Amino acid sequence: NPAVAVIGSEPFEDGVVKVLTAIEAGGLGNVRVWADDVRPMLRVLPNASLARVFILFPDPWPKRRHVKRRLIQPALVAELARVMRPGAELRFATDIGDYARTALLAVYANGSFDWTAARPVDWRHRPEDWPATRYEQKAVREGRRCYFFSFRRSLLGDANSR
Image (cartoon, rainbow, N blue to C red):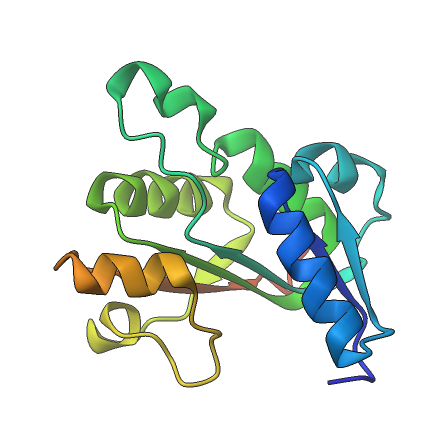
């Protein structure tokens, strides 16, 4: 949608090159790329400035000793709560069951987001309006279940005001 400003974050050079090539080929003037970890960028964004955030198949850091490196952590969820406007949507997808559980717990514990799932099918299948990724396609090829979570930023303000 050319009327919507899009900011993408990708810490890996190959991914940045691919997305910049696609942006140029598509003549997309509304897309910007942050070629680094998203956390420093979030820290400088104004409060309530984002309407939608996608975190699709981030590095799962599957080894137990590396779990602390996962993107979805309480500190990131708190920063997302700050930069997302009330009513904004947070979308998260992974093919790692343990990551799905810990991400769900981190978002729930923050208190600033409501999980929008009404029934299991809401998070077991990719909604039609979600972009497919090559990591999802790889997971499906390899027989892994994917998890698709959608949360709505609470209209009541931040978790600290409750």
